[in-house]
Length: 377
Image (cartoon, rainbow, N blue to C red; front, side, top):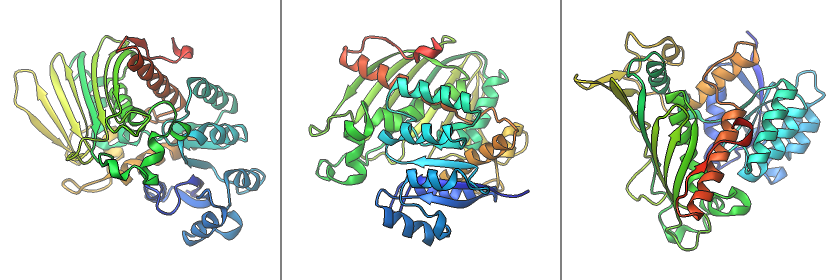
């Protein structure tokens, strides 16, 4: 089967997320890296793309140049990944969808709910895929947790507790580091800092595993480093449409925590726990029974898990291969085989609606807010 052609915007040299996308897109031989506009500095972007093997005529100086260069090619790209600062996502995603390209956008998909709803409508009108990189939902054992919930193995879900907390932005003297500064700058990050950066991964994971959507929430947002305009710590209580109670903590100043993303799901007949720092294991406790460790690669797992596992039991599959699973689902979807677990524009607009609801709640001393975008109420 011929490889699909893939292009990338952003994710240039020194980028945190760029290497994960390049490894993930090419891990299974499904995509070839055909085009790129990798840097806001045109010449630096062209030079780096060529070093990565992109042909000179497809190493572009900016996303507009790449759009103009690709749209009329017979061998144009099948998918474009957007890995640029938050404030640029909407304009780029809209332009590429309207030009008939499939899109994978980094989160948050947009900065406003109105923009998010427009992306949903544009994607539907274009007939193209707009996926959002909630890649943690593509870890095999996260798919196992979702399958167990869906098949009733822990009964009706009562409670979900999740957090995404790290301490890598806890040094106030590092405030001018460009990889840190933009995340707390409203002009580039939007209305929220840490919750929009990391917390929405945890919120999406809760919806994904529980197979339910967040309906209302109450938030306490804090900027613990005084120079920051946006929050670096947040506590969110939420209720899901099916009645599940949710608790979420997210922080970037929890010094001593490294990645700090985990989730616990408590049902009528059992509980599950998954942690990103031990991603090959899912902890399962049946009511009245012993706690068990379910290992990636062992027998008896759900088919969806086996499909997305590459290496034998006891060998780790890390973050780039979780990203690769998103690209596996995208390749299938582009070729016409829909994948239920692929996060899409609807997930993206739900997330940004939750972000704005959390900010409004925080400003109103935790008053409960409707977390749904208007189009889904």
